[in-house]
Length: 424
Image 1 (tube, rainbow, N blue to C red):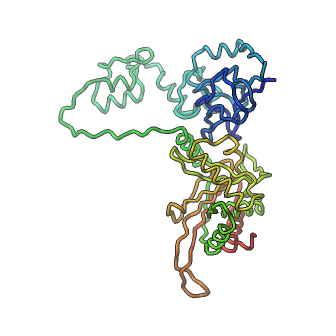
Image 2: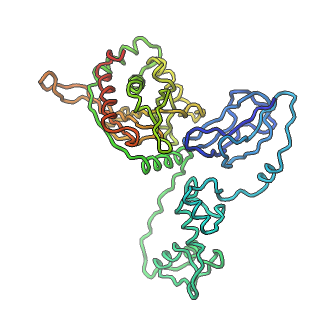
Image 3: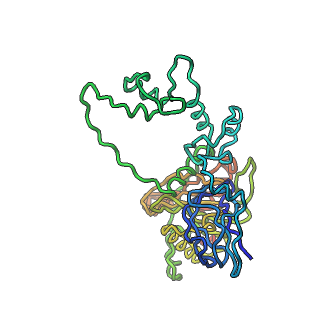
């Protein structure tokens, strides 16, 4: 029996996924569990595993295609099965040119504006991942009929012409109905009246898929989530001693991140409101505790997840963390590796950072930022003393967590950092 290959949903807000690269060709024999293709979602670029062993057939999605989640993109045929003929609808879709965008990728406001102006959204080219209000306004402005006696030109073309002292009447337009575009103005060869200094053009860096996804997500998080921050300085003597003892008993190297993951998971079990999420105007308590770890890779930032972290000991957390970090660096993360996170931990202490405020990763309610351990002069039994200190910063989504709840959670984390035996 044939097995469908579908576009997975890696997040609640995900509507589509993009095909980056097929790792197997149609008609090729595949084995269950091996990488089949690379896809891009709103979270990251990941490898999708083959759901069954057999022959890859009926591939209906190609590299660069934007596919709705849960849509079948191929099938895996069992031995002896024959590929079916694509339906007329699929055949038509594959032969037709891909539009610049589809109404399904537009925001509700953009869709409503397009309907009011009888505008086909496929004609609008979005600046980001989907069509927004600004994209529709820009299209309408650039295609607005020029008044009688007025030269048709885009707003940017008019601004460029004014800056260069050019008369629009002398420029031939290449846009609809002869409208002058910005490129038409830039193409005009007009020498400056006075010599000007030659300024070297800044070099342009290529933007990786992971970096672009990170930019889009961080921009959305920062502009839509009402943040507040709680900071706490803690004595890390107990944490250091715990790590030393754990490394003496474990074959796997234990890091401060492993210990903090264990502490955070236990604290989330005690403060369930922090292990919550905001979705569609409502608060939902997560049943499981899945801690995401912010990992910096060459292409950007990814957040693989340690699932059911509250049920693991430190050594088990360390093994999973090492595996996830290695596959993140190699670009081999699987969809399951980056889904389901209920809280995020971001540790920059290894880079010498004293403290920082992290951005909440929706729909999660909070993220803990950890700075380096540094010796500082602090009161010890009423006298000044030098102690290893560390700063914790909790960023919260105020729609889910208020100041008191966030402070109680951070208090628990701080107590267990300073006195790990109370947790153990």
